[in-house]
Image (cartoon, rainbow, N blue to C red; front, side, top):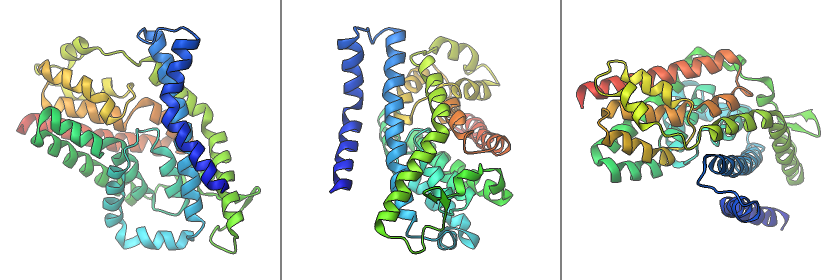
Length: 333
């Protein structure tokens, strides 16, 4: 009954999140949400609440589930010789979970802590924000089947290949140590051994508290960066510096996309506007991929769980994949 009540409260809070903050800021505080300040405050409060709820719910659920699996068993299922298959499966799971880049981070933490190979988990982290059913449907509606199929194929290829490369590099020691530890009342344990159901619930609650406590400053800074530039839509600037006459249009588009923060569905109106202004399809897709897979807020949040060398490796590999997609599509489409 307690779990059911907590679930009901979580669902209600998530469903009413945007409505509540809109009411509070507009009706109670009297802010005009159409202004840059009002829009930024709404973005910050709404997105902070949304991501904290997602973090709490996903970490709790994943931790509870992995108390029934030993680290060795999980590695046996998705590691070793099946690592390539695991990358494909993880990327497919990412497609089915339409998270923004920051919301995918708790899934990354849970998978790594459960013993899933790092490279396999990276495939999920890349695919989840980059490719999902919402983006596919909207892309199809705006640009047709060909562009939607190209985007999905390229996104999955980047997720699978980047994850596979990172997995072959064996960089697990570049993950912050706390990610691998599951604790009950402060003591590290193998959660698959001799736990009652109440112990398993306690492990899940403690994991939520521990991880939120460790990452909350990074979470606030990351979302704050996104809120500060929310609503900044420099369409003419994009056209000037990433237009079809610029041979460096693709890297310029990627660099311009990284500071922005949105999910695939949220960035599509800007993508459509840039397409209408004559930007090449490869440049447009590279820009969209950089926004959803390499956003600065995500990098700030990931820094709490990845050491700088692994974070830099992740950005370099994914960034090169996105650049390749942009250049290739501009040449062949």
